[in-house]
Image (cartoon, rainbow over all chains, first blue to last red; front, side, top):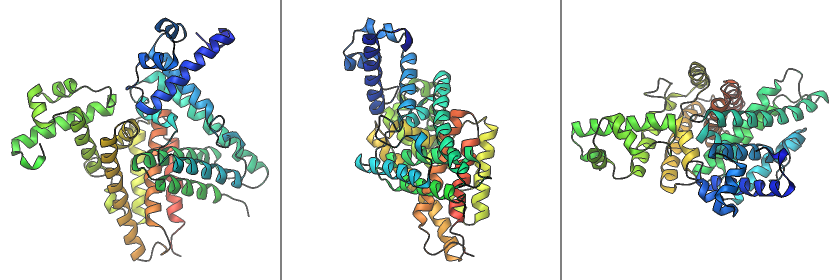
Amino acid sequence: MTERTLTRKGQATRERIVAAATELIARQGVAGTSTEQVRDAAGVSGSQLYHYFDSKQALIRAVITRQADAVGDADGLPRLGALDSFDALQAWADAAIERQAENGGRGECSLGTLAAELSVSDEDSRAELSTGFLRWKDLLHDGLHRMQERGELRADADLDQLAYALLAALQGGTLMSQTLRSTDPFRASMAAALAYVRSFEVG
Amino acid sequence: MTERTLTRKGQATRERIVAAATELIARQGVAGTSTEQVRDAAGVSGSQLYHYFDSKQALIRAVITRQADAVGDADGLPRLGALDSFDALQAWADAAIERQAENGGRGECSLGTLAAELSVSDEDSRAELSTGFLRWKDLLHDGLHRMQERGELRADADLDQLAYALLAALQGGTLMSQTLRSTDPFRASMAAALAYVRSFEVG
């Protein structure tokens, strides 16, 4: 059942289910989260849940889409698509580090956590996660492209490469900081990635 | 039951169990792997398995320790502790990228995958993973320190920061390449991290 064909009330129920699933999965992982727990947390019946998602797989895919859409928007970070200056990139990194410090080193980038748990074992989810990462990469690419057009970034800078380096630093730094309960790895990885982008600065 | 108190035969059996568990978990994740599957794959009885590992948790911790010890040794990559020149670091990155290309973009750094699956939900495993990451960081730090002593790296380079940046690039790049089934993110993240280290080169 896609979002388009739902009434407004139906959409609200669907959103409540996906939000509950997202929160449970962030805390317990995909494998540790049952549809019964989602049903209870969302306050819906089993048949209601089934009406919107006919399998746990379908629900997981909706969670992935939600997390891919949410980045830097609902979550209080600068939007990825708006990062079109060195200052904006630095502010984005600082905000992400700040938030992780507030969370005691725990990360919240559940797209990365989902990818680690699912990208090997679940081909449908892997494809969905891949789409999400590529969307993020394209958003970063767009901002870098505007910097290139304004003559701030060198013409020979490989924008896909820079965008991938930023995203991988975000993912890897989050993962390590979450494991070490320290923001040091995240600070280090973002500093390295930003320095790499800056190495293509004009002038 | 620790390794120390085991006979040689007992050690071999224990190692067979941990090897089987490692391989299953790499393919299916922790939650997707049952002790029954490990028992069957290792060709041991339930009571034998229990003799060495009295819980799935204990078995997982042994897998984590094994993966933390194995890096760049049994797995054909240059050893992390031997990376004490820019050429050695570059060769290490190239070998890791090459191996991922052979695997069709799939990563094998299961310490990272384990971290993503376990570091939020399982405190004992998180602590064990943290120890593993710190050991890797220290190995990289040692090589960088030798470069600093020989006057190849600037004295003001923060070696912990450089080591963390390299490891986070490895983890994040592996995760994204595994998800996208493309080595591009991994190549980009390693290029950025190595360029960052090189920016502290003397002369």
